[in-house]
Length: 161
Image 1: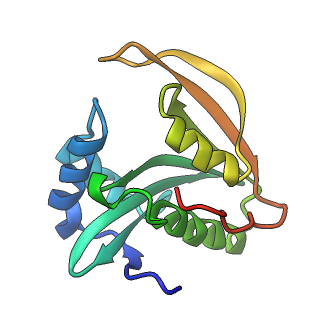
Image 2: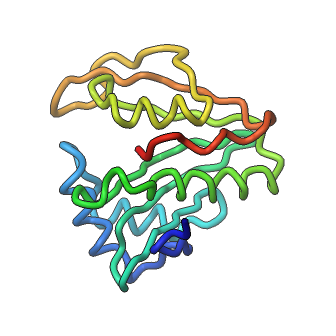
């Protein structure tokens, strides 16, 4: 089945919609300035958006450092969750990372965010540690996850995230 959304690089004009997703998804949303700085730093960052019917339904921000990729943020509009948008964004990022000869990926995720953890496990991420009180407002811990990107890509999920 073909996706109804298209993935493209994020642009300055997208920041308003990204802020809306940030505020709907995260207890500590990023600011307009942070998002603009991230999008405009194309030397070490790569932000993509999933667009459907002229609106952004999800986005992914990654950072490159040496032979590693760091997932900075991923957000999906709450009513659009579970449709495979996050998987599409990650698939596209993994393809780009392979072209860049990136070998490993890492990220932090709230320990309570089981839906995201399950998604990341499908992509080969595994826990290597915990950052205590990583999220300031909630004092919640974050799992530190790592994945080996040099192996074969993940099998498509049997169910959508």
